[in-house]
Length: 208
Image 1 (cartoon, rainbow, N blue to C red):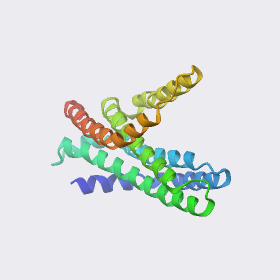
Image 2: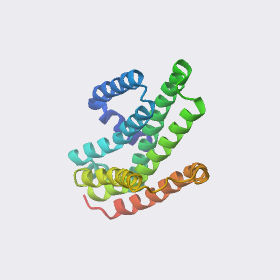
Image 3: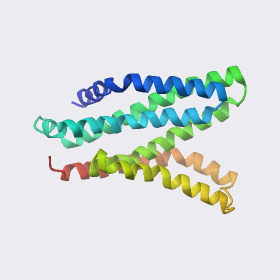
């Protein structure tokens, strides 16, 4: 059942494949031309995070959930399939970024390999935390109603960092950042586990 649901989501993205490939090529070329490797990492991981959002939009538009629940598929399985697909999509994005990043380090020498790997790892963990926050919102409100909330989830932390910089608030110390780096995998995994529980609770109460 789980495998079938994930395959269904992959087929649902066939229409978007050309657009995603074009965006990927564009940002790779841009990163090579302007040595914007950090931006490339963020963009690719963000694109992969948007894949499960797109599949949820397709499900919502086609009233797929009502059809799925008429079959011997549990609500928990449906929710878990979305999370597994989302994590797989991000890991694929991280793998693509990893290959490009390592090649960039080897051929340009603009950045140390350790630094590039830390950027990739950090972006991956931020992506997982973002998924942990946004997926319950999507299950609760649906894709259309949740779009504004998704923008706020991205916009508010960014604005807080910019405002803090302008107000002269000192950034975290190197020791604090090092501690956060060690704790971030646990935070990301713990956040995902809690997110799954919340989403299952929300989905169990929904009526289609």
